[in-house]
Length: 127
Length: 127
Length: 127
Length: 127
Image (cartoon, rainbow over all chains, first blue to last red; front, side, top):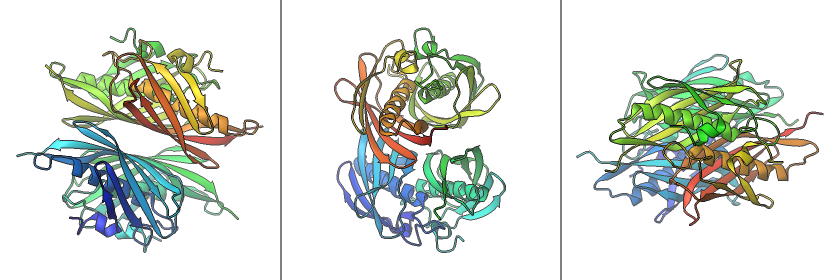
C-alpha cells in the first residue's frame, strides 16, 4: 500500500507494527539530505508521522474509522550524513477520538537523532 | 544548491526570499502523498522546515555561522489530493543564537492546509 | 466565572473577545515569576491556553458542546521582569471537531515575549 | 529559592532531582483549576517547564552558565478535578547549548494526564 507514496519515495520501510509499538527505517542519502549533506529535519518528521499513522491505522476499526495527523512536533538533536536511521513509535495515549504517539529516531549506535510526538485524530468514515 | 537533496526530490521550489519573508511551492503528487491519496503531513513539515532553513541561511554571516533546525511543530488543518501547495515563511524572532519562523501552507485558493513554527539555531562555524 | 481559578490566581484579565479575536493581560510579579526574577515560561503558556480556551468557548454551541485543550506549544523569545504582558489570540482554523489558535504575548512596547499555538477539541456534552 | 515565585504560588514541590531525573508534585485545587473545575492545561505546562528548568539548573556550571526555557509543548490527555499530580522529568538530550527534557504528568494511579517536551537553552553568564 506504500507504492507510489512519499514513504516509498523516501525509502521508508516498516520492520514491526505490534499493537502500539512500531519500528521503521529510512536511509540517509540524496533523497533525505538537505543541501549541507545532513539528514533533513523534515525527512525525520516525515518518518515520525509515517510511524504514528501506520501504528494508528492498525488499531482502528477500518470498517467505520479513518485516522489523520492532527499535530506533530520534533526536536532535532544530532546530525547524520549517511547510513540509515531507525524510528521507534510507542503509543502514549489511546482515546476515543485521538491517539498520541512518542517517536524516537536513532542512528546505528542507538544515539538519539530526533524525538517527536504526534497526535492522530480518529474520524468516523462517511458512508 | 538543492540538486540531489530532499528539496529537489520532493519538488520544492523557492519563489521568493526577501529578508525574513520566504515563499516556496511543492506539488501534491506521488512524491508527497500518503497511502490514502492525501498530502502527507510529513511532506508539509519538510516544506515548512525547508522554508525556515532557507530564510535563516540568507540572514546569517556565512563566513562565520551556520544554521540548523532545532525544533519544529505543525498542525494539519485541511487535506489536499493534488495540485500544488504554497508555503509562506515569516521571521517572528531574530536572536543572536536562534531564529523563530512562522510558516503557513495554503492551497491554490489561499485556504490554510498546515501551520508550522520552526526554531533554528545559529551556530559558529568551526575553523 | 474566573473566580477561584488559575486565571484569577495569576491575575489574568480579559480585555476583548470578539469572534475569534481575544486579548488578555497578565502581571509580571511574584505570582508569575521564576526564581531568577523573570516571567516564568509556564505563566506565559497558562495565559496563552486561557486565551485560546476563552475564545473557543464563545464560539461553540454551549447547549450541546464543550471545549478542552488538546495540545499547546510555545517559544519563549524575550525575558521580562515586571510590568504586564498582553496576549492576543487569533483563530487560525475552525473545524467541526477542533479549533487552532495563534497566540502572541507582547510587552508594553509591543515586543514579542512568547508565541504559542493551541489546539482545542470541541466535544459533545454528555446528556 | 522558590519563595515568592510562580512555583510557590501554584504549590509545586520538588521530590527528587538526581542527574537528569526530576520528580515534582502540584495540587489540583482553586490555584490550578480552570473555570469548569478541571486542572488547567496551563498549570500542567507550568509544572512541566518548572521540572525541566530545575533539572537543567542542577546540571550546568553555575559560575559561568545560566539556563532559560526556549520551547515547550504538551498534550493534555486526561482531565482531573482534585488531588495531586506528579511530574517526572527525564533528560533526553544534553548538548553544549541545549538540553531536551521529556516530562510526563500522572495522577495518583499512574494514569497519564499530560505529556510535554521542553527545550532549555544554556547561555553563558555575562560578566
